[in-house]
Image 1: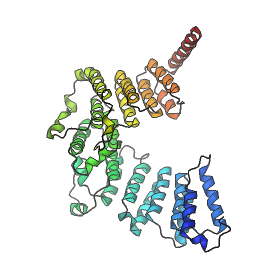
Image 2: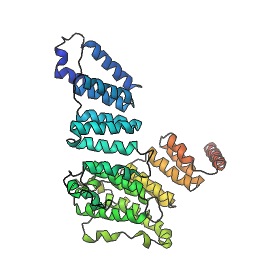
Image 3: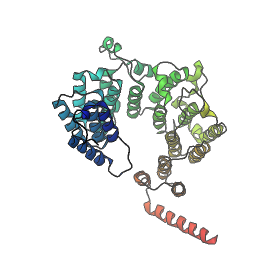
Length: 419
């Protein structure tokens, strides 16, 4: 069809649009990237002269496939032919940099987008840049992502929301200039908070930040409240609190907030105990508290039917994080009740759920729990994957686990023959 068209028609917007749609079509094939590349080669052979949008699609396809060299070469050729980069161009290049953790590419895009003026026009590009820095530095500086990300954040956004959360204290440096910076987008604020939570291991500090976050959420104040409209921030706090038996009970509080629209009261900040007040006796009895809370959740199946929610309901990932946090800290019965609750609410455990539960049992060296989880995982139709192997690697006595698995398999065979 393209080859039969006059050359002037190949420049028409509708033809270019057709090419874009074809090159972004989702097809169930083994090597979609190669198919798309061949299709583009055919278009060039037919005489199609790519416009800016079509070139950006080529860059995006290469970036998604991890072919950063092709993405960058396409970008260079386009510039040499007079096609100025767009916001989408830089976002696509950053996506490729994230795939390859190419910090040099991130810095070049940062410089060029700043010179071109796109960096200060596009909130999407600002977020993509921060996210690329976060991912690209994650391997080398994985213990200090916030310290790495903060200087870039301050070049793009206002620090006031960070001060309200308590994760940034002014050093007196050029505050007047920073006050003129634009408000961060919700994704950008969520990312910088995630980086802070990843870097900080002090229970008291994390708890104080969570209290501030919860206050803004329950009073629906400022940009911070909007973080609760997706599960990502709550999940990040749960991961942080789930690391310690002193704070794991707060994970249950977070899920309670996600399930039940909160009552707006000034005294909500006082409802969480400090970590110093949690005694060992509380830890021993917390199993009952978890069970009571979970029973309360299960009795109310209409919680997701609210037309307007300031707080997003738990996702499968949320439940998976909760079950892992509970079992890791010795609350296996409560973790199992979380799985039952998921199913009661119509949310099927995913491979992430089963592997999280498996990791917890493996860390406890609980062979019956490991075997029972593997059996349920198989019954649910999930195959063992890399994360299953990684979870089982936590087992110290591998030979003892293999013997237990063999005995369990033999018992199942005997039971089947007996029937």
